[in-house]
Amino acid sequence: MASRSHVDVVLVEPQKSENIGACARAMANTGLGRLVLVRPRVSRPELMEAAATRLGEGILRSARICRSLPEALAPYPVTAAATARAGAQRGSPVSPRALAEELLRPAPGGNDPPPAALVFGTERDGLSNADLRLCALAVTIPTHSPEESSLNLAQAVLLLGYELLLAAGGEPPQPLPVLPAPAEDFERAAGDLERVLYEIGFLPERDPGRWFMNVKKILRRSGLTRGECDLIQGICRQIRWAAGNGLPPGRAPWPGGGAPAKAAEETGPENAPLPEPAGGRERGQDKEPASCRPGTGRGKGAEAGNGPEGGG
Ligand code: SAH
Image (cartoon, rainbow, N blue to C red; front, side, top):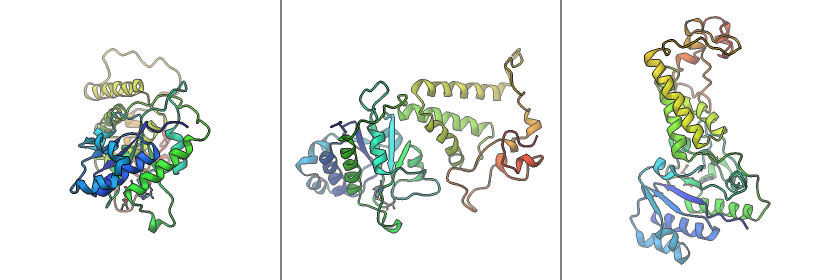
């Protein structure tokens, strides 16, 4: 049976000592790796230890404590958020079975699977949208009805651990095509791109992170390697430089083929192809950015969907 010890459990601001203990026990039951606690509140350590039992003792003792979720996720190439609530901005969650198979995929070349973090939210509110944006994958455990979707924290850990246990006894899954960059490198590159897109006016001033989700989705889908993250940062540096200094002096005209790119004054920033924010637009929440406001562009193209060819 394939090992699951590369899958760590991250609890974001757990409030109840006994839940932390019960999570450690569930991890021991199902053979998961390390426990990572983000700003835990342990008011009753004796309850935590009792709930962990002897089985979870070692996992509790070696728990890693972090101040923030980005700090907790930094080393992991694979990250998944467990969420009871699907919703506009909360991505498309996969099933526990599909997630288990994904987390067991070996690194390229058929080596061991890369380290993975399975992230759980606080008992009262679950994970925030910002927390979810830090994870590549989302998983929802099916329940009887949407009204009864909220499981006890430790039971959610147990169910996902159980699916991993079952999947580990099955056929070995396909290796990953590339080794994804650790979350720290991915977030740095994505953060840089988000900032530069904001600075050049592509993202709106209000809630740019929400609009950037669409771009982040593309980056996620391509499973960026560490080197590719560096490349994106290099591109951002050059865009930022050119935005401040103009085109490099003496730069020869574009030598490649294809249609010449339209000048900004010809297309207008309002024709830039920015799609709806992830999960669709919630009424009254967002003023749309100039770059995707319908009807303000020149010509029909702007109304017909803001494609790059629009307005021509
Ligand atoms: N009241 C919160 C639920 C918190 S339960 C809410 O409505 O979101 C604590 C954590 O357990 C959640 O943040 C999530 O990580 C996990 N969890 C609970 N139910 C789940 C479910 N049906 N699917 C996936 N994760 C779940």
